[in-house]
Image (cartoon, rainbow, N blue to C red; front, side, top):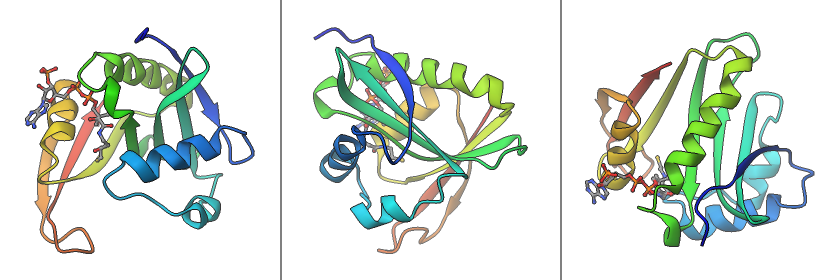
Length: 150
Ligand SMILES: CC(C)(COP(=O)(O)OP(=O)(O)OC[C@H]1O[C@@H](n2cnc3c(N)ncnc32)[C@H](O)[C@@H]1OP(=O)(O)O)[C@@H](O)C(=O)NCCC(=O)NCCS
């Protein structure tokens, strides 16, 4: 499969949102229900889908309030068959380019302390670990807070 693709900003009314929710439920460590997605405050969140040959293969969701120069990376997910292929970097670079006009200067995130693949990816794209948040997750797992200054 071609690993380059294109990024599109999406809204709840986009027909591909169901594919995103399916990808989230199948492939994200802590997926949201359909209702969670419906309840999202869309004026404070931006969702981007990564398309390869018109198929949605990944997505990035951030929380961002207009005028704030910080944003919060809530979800990044790539189809498992494409991981390790370089696709995530194409998606990430394209995503960063879309942030420039929004005036975003930093991105925070939390990641499960045992999600070593995601931590490896974030470190590769220059995130720095800020601190460990004990029992950050509802099942008691620790979270690692990371920050990228753009
Ligand atoms: C997070 C995600 C988008 C990253 O994409 P990816 O294609 O897997 O990432 P890459 O392979 O480019 O980068 C991962 C890096 O971590 C390293 N890595 C991979 N597995 C690892 C492991 N088990 N332990 C340590 N490092 C690991 C890799 O070597 C790689 O670095 P390299 O390219 O320098 O070799 C993808 O893994 C994903 O969708 N995961 C499921 C959803 C998820 O967990 N999201 C994050 C929640 S906070």
